[in-house]
Image (cartoon, rainbow, N blue to C red; front, side, top):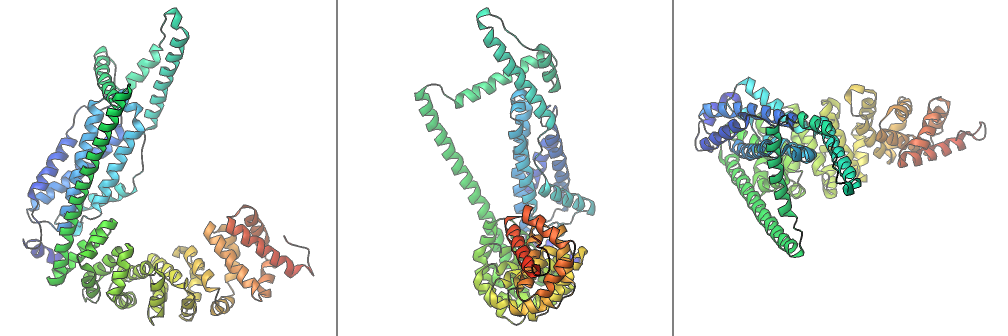
Length: 558
């Protein structure tokens, strides 16, 4: 794939020019990273944000040095990043130029603003097609790491700032109380040492610093006063102005959103045209970019479908090119998250092609994503029926359950679970040989899909074929007893469901094995007392059943 990129990227008809956008990005990034005399508040949030933007600046400069047109999805990404970095600049400047004391009091609000901007940065990078950009491996790896970190980032509020703020507020409250009590004596009290300590910790150590902060506080106070008028007439005027400002903001937001949607629409239509008319190299790249674009946001998924992408992506599922096939099935998976698109995908006759990829896809990732697509499509009840009625889908899912990676086995198990919610599919899943594989997965700690396998087994137990197949296992009961003790909350519920079902339907042998196992009764009693509501109810039912089984020859167990 990579060898085809230079020729492809050089085609001016296939991509958008974006030199001015890159220049603007580099300029605003340099403005942020070259800021001097940074504030004494939000130190960590500001420093980490500057490091992120420095890294992105290296990416922008390297892309500019390429001097080649960019893929459409990267232009969308860079436009979003420009918006984010510009807002970062405004936020840092407000921390730097505004009142430090007011910033300290507002530390949680400001910290949340930094957090929101980092998350937006991560979302923008979701659609950056790094593999299509001719950049160095070092920059690519750094950007990938930045993307992962931005997606995982958590809100950080500096505990030292919280502590300093609390100390400041305590001093203010204490001084107010003392001054109130001594009002008639015309005395004023202030804890000078504590105030000096607080001010020093946020960079104020000289009379000049104090004067500068007083000026900033007065300006901030004026701003706050303008928002809170004391008279009723002023309040009404303020309310009117606020509504007007809110209305203006709403219009600005709608305009910005419409512009963004128009950009996505133009990009999607452009890429769909390349799917329809392009060479295999162009199709491969267009499918990849649509895959990324469909990964983020319901609006994107709707717009891509409206641009007519789905029928072309369905056709590409039969491609002999492994990357085209993988990109097409993953794009369809991402599009299917939007419910209206599920109907369009099924109407395009996609299911046979998706099952074909599931059976014999050219990469394991393509097969796994085909299973995930079946899971997504089967969220609609009518599609559970039509997918399960086909002769190949369930067999192919069971095949992936046997051969797939951990992720693939989980995708297969969750798809089988969805299909098993329709009663007629249960027998088909049992006949396909799923139950021995599911029990085997319970014994495989490395597989990591115990809860998924248990969920499918619990559903299959409700059909006669499933019950008979489960009864044949000699290893299942001891496994379930262990899961009563060590499983997750959901795993414990499903384990009890299975044991209860086995005991109810003439399962005297299962009941006997439970009674002679020294761990089973204590585990059930523990769940009866401390489990989830569903687990408690089922544990009580199973204990009563076991009690009846042994009441004639043993003491009660409940």
